[in-house]
Length: 369
Image 1 (tube, rainbow, N blue to C red):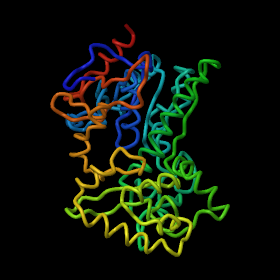
Image 2: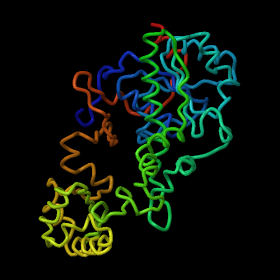
Image 3: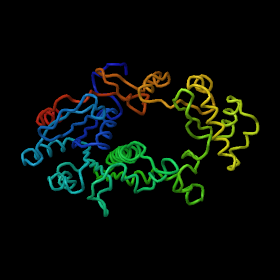
Image 4: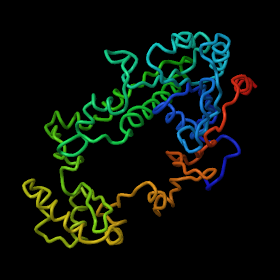
């Protein structure tokens, strides 16, 4: 998609999908952004008087936003009529809230038996913590993931990518699409109970397996992918920026040594854990001896498994991201481009975040038309 371009019509593999989103924060809106990018027509129901979305809030893009008083019986009836014409519902309230509003799965199924009902929570729809407040850091803490990430002396939260978006949004979208596929056979929708804790535990599958084989140690910076080995980590350069190296395979490590002109004595270091501290120190001193530009010119694009550690402002200008169109400018706002890429039905940003809310009756009329 060209910068500042806006598609004339909906595009993508989900162009015939209708989604009703109940406004929230975090993983639910991001999931609906993904559905919209793939072509879904998303109508977001917000509360009366809600502040208009900031155009820079890119996760709110691609929606028709309407306002409805969910404490008003007439509004609830209009929402139910909208849901009759929908394929998917997405909500992220605490368990029981939608039921108390008269919009729970059973009530909606009586109007639309084929609707897929997506529920996005941190703890899930049942369990001792289901009614407790929480955020990404709490959810990943409970799963073993946070314990495994960080420096040797303390865990470090990995933004909210692992919980909210990795274990939350992506599993919600996968569940919705799977339920829609099944509904083509049965004609019946179902509830998708997407809990961040469940998703993150699932994401930990490799390490759960490795721990049972004795190949994963419950001590940070002691394992291959957690910074424990010196040839899979980040190093500071002479002028301050960091670079990353990750040549895990022997042939790629050999290429790194060749390009860095490390002596043959280091070739066997990966297989001798007692030499890891010395190798780490050697790499640290070497990278610290020259500026980042030097290492980028020498190593980038080679089989040494190298990349500079870029802040967002520089990432948008990197030649690879530019060539891929990874960032898109729409109405002066930088957006991440839709992902993944489709060969025949390309995804696209359907619209910028809505500056003002519309009317529920208008959305209902459009879907009925």
